[in-house]
Image (cartoon, rainbow, N blue to C red; front, top):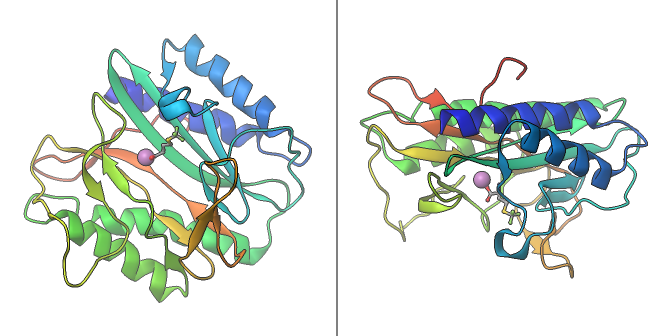
Length: 242
Ligand code: MF3
Ligand code: CO
């Protein structure tokens, strides 16, 4: 999983470098697919439940699962890139939001808060806590900054398959409706705050994949695959350039 994670993190960086005004999202997808294959990996999303691409590229009010297309990025677009890689039967999954060209300060704040949400979650990604402690830390930080966390899509366990139990929500439900496992060493999780500048509601476009904010507000995403240890969590989707 460390190897899969490293390639996924490298692919995320490669994709981020390609985010510029005028870039065509399907071209970014192609370049990153070639990169993953050159590193001995397999794109994990391609053909997963019929998904047609290597990356999810979600722009502005698109939250997740945006399909690469002939769309040209414009100056100031915020671009969430999600990538999964299979290496030797194990999966790494990570995401980040990048800006094409000149960012406005509000976009940068949304992106930075979303990234910080992940690290707030990491404070509880330790033995002695439960999944919901990670969820609560993420939600609290997003809402303290005036944003909302998406509820219809959640993080997940990951290993030999991209999506394994348990779910890792970015919010806490009261009363609790689902199992809330304790964290134990060896668990591998994809922790992925999806943060909307406006309301948390989302809808899915007619393409059956693209998730957009219901109110049209911009959204950001940040994800790493992590390992629960006896001490601090280990981030598996990490590499020299990330
Ligand atoms: N990274 C996404 C997730 O965490 C996976 C995208 S699934 C695909 O769930 F179907 F779009 F490939
Ligand atoms: Co994921």
